[in-house]
Length: 131
Image 1 (cartoon, rainbow, N blue to C red):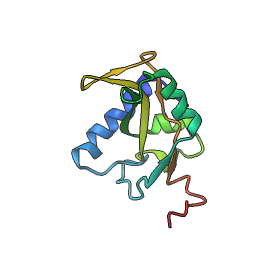
Image 2 (tube, one colour):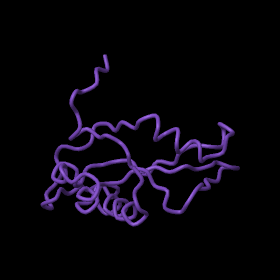
Image 3 (tube, rainbow, N blue to C red):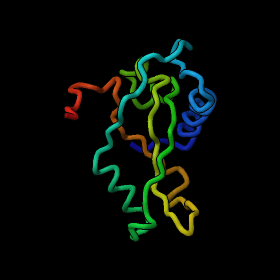
Image 4 (cartoon, rainbow, N blue to C red):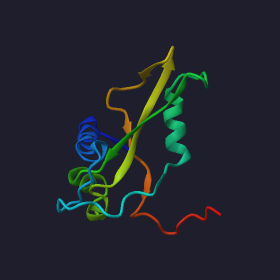
């Protein structure tokens, strides 16, 4: 699902103020988030859609992933039934990018951010078998 640049920036800021600084993420009530994200699943359609916007050279075109954290507002906007569980949860926001001479350049529109992952928790049923 495409998210706005403003929503991305708010998620990135929350992460930068908390987890990136070595502090615990905060939930909706401002308490430490004690059940953090274990994994995030992205479907092939989302990944291939981003890759289609990147350079066709497999050594140049790719996806840039940003580690972010759900704010209460972003969780409410995109996942209104899971606001409590998602506020403060780590997630990935991504966009198409190219690598050229060790420089990352972004492709597509300025607000082309995707956050279409299913993260655990809260979406853990069934838990994948990794054996």
